[in-house]
Length: 105
Image (cartoon, rainbow, N blue to C red):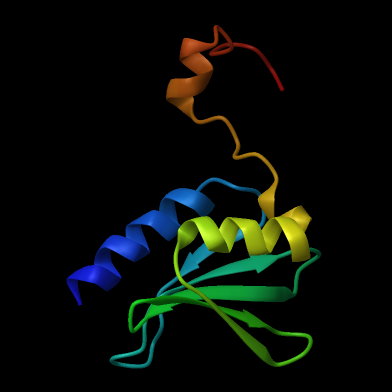
């Protein structure tokens, strides 16, 4: 379980702040939480960590893809769902450091 926690943190770091990604806690007891990617309102894919692996579920094809770690997740997304890897939005701290704290985007 400690390995899953470490892997989950790596996945969260890779996806957090990117446009279209949201964290979803599951209502089913014992089920892992997931990251969901939506583009245009419908969930296109979800990512969960279970049994030491990263599991990608594709809604449109009802297909599961399993990769070993967050780096392989990023590689898979780059090859198969490039829109899901858009740059993270700049947070408050990054905007302040970049001198854009009071600028209008």
